[in-house]
Length: 348
Image (cartoon, rainbow, N blue to C red; front, top):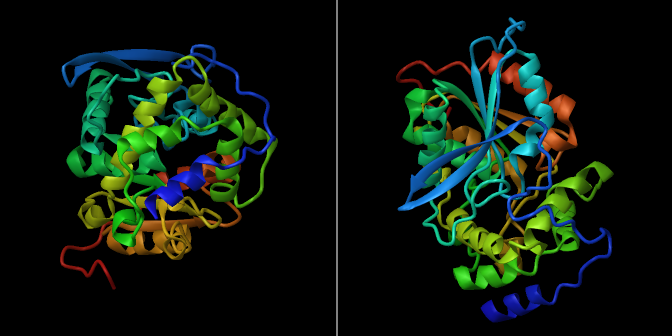
């Protein structure tokens, strides 16, 4: 069964919908971010690396809800810090300082030759960056894989996170327990090397956007595809294989009940993201990635949570419906869920 699935995956026919992706360089050297990019140099696992980040200073003339507060935005696996552009602008206009890193292995940050990826390690890396920037206590927002990282960061450093916002986070189901087949890192690497713009678009069309594509999405497909097809493709694909293993083996759902801060969970009603569906038996694949249901279950697990379901939106609300999402995000930050009274039942 395992090798039949792998063989089927390797024979997928590309759809001729996008031109060949440009080669922006292994660290996206030719792609401009919406705000000034800086680089934090640090040592981890006996090696020196850099994390790229944007640090958009608060507008001193703004005295709104964001005055004196910092928001940290964490990107998903198929995305970069740049994909938060519209959200950064909205938060900046509301008076927030906004910090947006690219995690190791992604986008403009270093691509290690080898690295022991874990969400704990990425959380520590992110904390080192924020400490260096003297960010203080933060409002933490994570999308997709970044939602898994945000939850882990909040569990590790609860005194530093005043509010937590999870946007269509991965890890709300245990893929291994559901029956998805485990692939070795070598097997994942072989599959990662096959990614092209056309294959990425097909997956995102079906899983992220509910079968509805807009030309505005093309730029993000080309950006991602350039990392898979450009000069640093082997290094990038290897890192993504390691990261896929981390995502598969470290679901966060079992610890959601330990989140100690007000938490808002955004879920797109059309979101059917399931990064491991193709290596699941058909009967298992059919029930995976039901985000409205996963969101409802997760909200019941989290002690101080509010679920916001976005109708007509899929996996990437900050790109699909930025005005609606950003307005809802500001509202959620301004009016976070009220903490439950001690001794109250977290699962009424």
